[in-house]
Image 1 (cartoon, protein in one colour):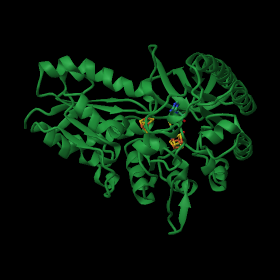
Image 2 (image 1 turned 180 degrees about the vertical axis):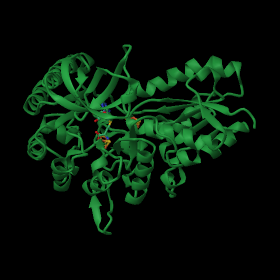
Image 3 (image 1 turned 90 degrees about the vertical axis):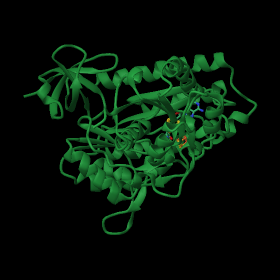
Image 4 (image 1 turned 90 degrees about the horizontal axis):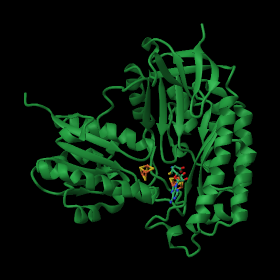
Length: 441
Ligand code: SAH
Ligand code: SF4
Ligand code: F3S
């Protein structure tokens, strides 16, 4: 047997890229590659990239700059760019970056081994097609679990075309994977020791497919089916669009114990004028009413959201509407970003861009409010006993860390043997980004 070749993958962006990187590693396993965590002894380096904001895309080019000496020292090294930058700028990358040997878009990962073979023979290979054949059917099923939690892509792509967003162009049209294949993957993961599955999709709650009795169903039906699998104790899903939260899914939050009380439901802005300009197709009030219905089904649910500040045309009054919405909802966590004009998106062409210093100021104010809400949600856990799924050792000796149902990181002093177990923990302290507690008897 020859020594296995080594593959180093660097992953940027969202959770779907994390899932995709594992699939690519498995596909290359069939070509005799094993994964290494060091770029400097790899035979192949893959950058799995993100195009969502300008900063994210720039990281790829600066990383390629850092890899240059490595490639010069070892001309046999193969360098590939995958992910959303690959999809958006494929031909340009090959033209501008002589050290890149292959470029592969998210819908072509099943063709990676073939591309790598061509690159190995000295050709520079690009594949950014949206092929007819089913990528997932041709990609290997997950072979090994990397701990008690796992991602599972159930839906990919987006048909919503928010005016700021590149995802519909980089990931393509909305596609739902068939329920049978999702169930088979979930069973394999559970058998490998996974206790918590996070179902992924750019618009995960737009998932639809045939359910067991042959009728069409939505994400709620899929969740009920997966919750019935032995070993699957916890389910989450991300990311959802408010307009696809149907009655059945809301009801599932009250009725399926495995469905965890945390929901990421991005609203982006609290101003109807801006929501309209963003092409979000919902109002602030519709979002607030939806939150009420979700909380009626599951009163203890924690909600989180994404926000964009400084979308073209956003006035002080629009921004105040966003702050008012945040105060009205009370989020358990949130992510906020300065608007970043993306090539090819409608909003990037608009004239009324917001000055950088105004954006900075708004971002700071919004983040201060979000942080205070996040701290309040965490502080409210002190004194309560919550179930924690333990994932790994903590920073300090003897410490183990896991996640509560509300997705709070919780650390305790406990033996490593509790890894993979769900244990009740009495919360005793709330820190900036995590909770501390004691495993209850
Ligand atoms: N599919 C998900 C995630 C999209 S990207 C969804 O629909 O929510 C994650 C977040 O990045 C978005 O929710 C949005 O808040 C932010 N984002 C997307 N495009 C952006 C842009 N051009 N500038 C700044 N933030 C952006
Ligand atoms: Fe982007 Fe909007 Fe689709 Fe989310 S719903 S991926 S923000 S276009
Ligand atoms: Fe980024 Fe693509 Fe995910 S643009 S956020 S890696 S879908």
